[in-house]
Length: 78
Image (tube, rainbow, N blue to C red):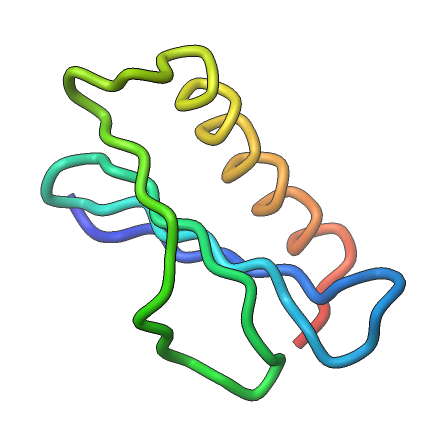
């Protein structure tokens, strides 16, 4: 399975975006807020797919990935 990457530019504060990566290897989700022009960040938050200590949060993040994909389809930003 391939990684899923999705990002959305901030609505109110110019210059930043929310970037989510769902790993195709283990299903973990990595969340980063970074400047619009950046592609890589070494500071992120990771929620594990297996043995998560936050199962409700993980499910909500999976739903967020899907929502961001729909937003990108309906209102592309880049």
